[in-house]
Length: 308
View 1 (tube, rainbow, N blue to C red):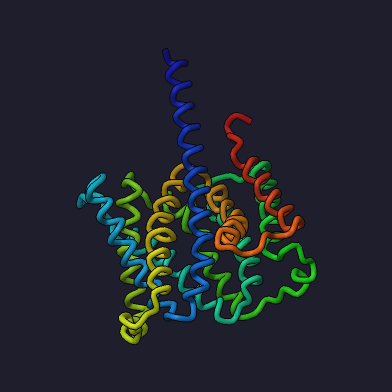
View 2: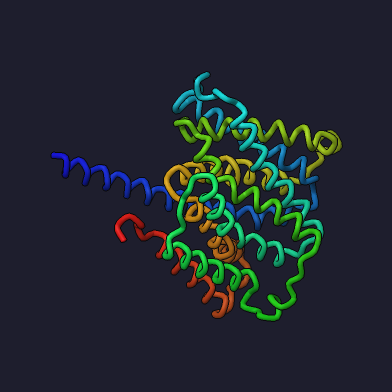
């Protein structure tokens, strides 16, 4: 009886593991879409105002979903400093990303972003004592090479031209904040449902962003914004914020931090898919080689570490 119970528990654990991977696969696809739409609205609205608005809209959606679903209980918001801390960390990433992109070239910034999974593995050990196994390390290395190959469009000269400037350094600090988020979620969560915990984070993050970007919020002519800005804002708020925050937290409670953030390696590949869907040119065969490396990395990450 005890053997059967152990086998059933193990099967449930494997199921949770696979669900975590599926959540991050969806996460990477939704985040990639924000790049295609984000480029179209980046110069139409101040970064602080944009991010404050997306957190507020996402908070309204997640709050409603949490109220209808698991419910919002006072006990779920015990120790509110947890939400303030994690909301500040994630909002810091978005603010520094936009400020860094004011001077950093997109290719250079994307190259900096590929450091995030490795940093997340380090934070996973520091905060949770999660160990990065040799297989995971190999997968991270392969995924990083594949992502860089896609980002640089298989152009070695682009890699040689990479320069670290002020914008890249600002964005690097933002990537540190992004990398610490998954293990921090797992450390601070006290059993709250994903929707409830995400709602608390969004409220705290929105307050931080409103205070930080108050001048930009007041200066923005909201009634005069172009339709594409509202389309982009709605996508960023719901698809690339509300849904992805829930998916990220869901996966962070089931997978090691390094595995969670490794899915950022798939973002460049998904961007190509989005570009093709929007009617743009197909990538060259050499770039598709980088896509193949990213897929190999994910296959390695899907392997259950507990079974060898």
